Image (cartoon, rainbow, N blue to C red; front, side):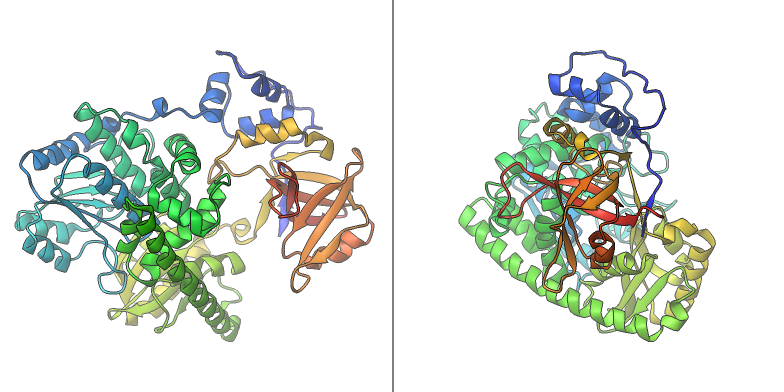
Length: 584
């Protein structure tokens, strides 16, 4: 890994254009706009006027787009209103991952305020597989279901929805996955990625699409939106878990959803927060990604995704806590299985390393692996080997699995190039689910590699740390830290800023820490300020000789709150991303 050329250096000579002021800014922001580092971070995000600064630093629910700008919204709202007026039986159906279960919980819980003939269902990964099935349609018919609201899936269910229509069952599809050229014959389709969509923001999560549907329903019926906005904590969890861009409407919904998580969260989410020891602490997007979301996901991966919805629609905290404890147990089981399968995958890779050495991709197949874990394993292998990875197992007679990609490479297109070999596939540019006949795995492996080798760029196969600005330790003031907090919530397209400081030396008290001395606890100074800075470099013990040599070196890092139990409240430390010799 290396440190790439920074976007900007305060020591440079580039003239900074003043931001055009159109409103009065709070004093701290006024000060920030005089800071060349803050100005450059805003510029990198395309923010050029103070009005844009206002919208970015202080996201407003008033800036959410009119839901009726989304093609199909009129039809969707009209069909839902019709169903409620006729007392039809409504089924809310969704995927078993975090995005799907939060979407189902939001739509079901909100509509239940106004309507009682409504229920929800989540398919099981093991028995039902992804999305809607013919068997599920038959079960809906038997149960007297008239309308299905399907969330975070359904955009490719052409045959299933045609069959449902023949039985008199209508579908409203709320999806955000990439559609094919042919679409299901549904009563309405809401998907901001439709080819002819004019909706201004195409990057919604599946739960985000469900929220916009409920927003359209609310507006059409003259209902105040306050209660709906109170459910944005569920949308924030979906945005964080599904790794959609943290810009536009996603930033607005995540910002206000985090506020809700920190003040009056959903009962089920509060129970998970209790399990994670997050009560009374400021909840960040990182907490959602690494603590809350994995537990919600564990239900669908290890047992039944419907248990996550049961938790998220709970009205009693005691009941919610009991459900959260069960889900936490599933998450512990998931961790053990994840570790086991990752180790087995690495053993396979070592055995065939001579064949993989020159390849730009990796396809691993084991019939006995647990289907609910292979997506996580694919992510871990992608991080470890830094190339597009597909991990497959045998499920219901098909080789079924998940693919993950490296930064900048569209793995959806790579999978799509082999679609004639596949039974089903769907997803995003960085993550795709797929299935095929077992005998097609060798040919899929060959053609997947052929596409990746022809289209991936050399620098996409090398992890690099991209620096946003060169700074000195003297630049890291309390005001600077407060200004950086205004850039939150972080996520894709609004990553946490990475800084570089050159000519750093060990103060003399840096040391190796960790069970196996795998981390470096740094006390360092730069050549200008003389301030001793607290830093941590995880899994970088190979850099110890450089740090301990006394010679100056360069570090790339983010600035984080120091949450160690011995740290003073409000203190921070540098989270080191890379250490390089000044000779490089």
